[in-house]
Image 1 (cartoon, helix red, strand yellow):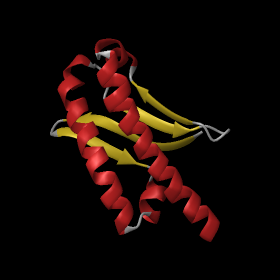
Image 2: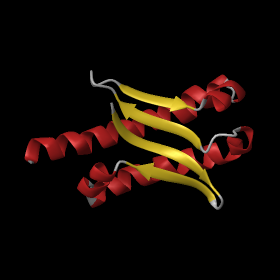
Image 3: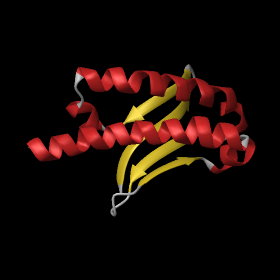
Image 4: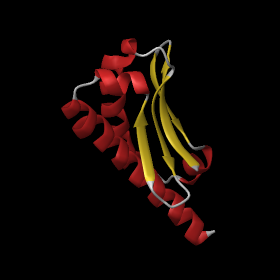
Length: 111
């Protein structure tokens, strides 16, 4: 399993933690694509972070079979309404993961 990213609660808000290798391979246009998605997702998670005792709110990995996994922590998954969970959080989380996979694959092809 390959770690892609996670959103953690920190004392000053929500922190986006990115796979270090993918971060090193990012080009400026990737940042332009990711920034609005990460911002919206962080702002949405901020609304619910008090409901979670866990520091990690959302995480994404790529499984060995290439399948992308985007998961809310269990407590948040139970507390957030279905529309927000599926159409805002998980959908944007999947978009972020898709962009990161493109970056990872481009690096693999060219190196």
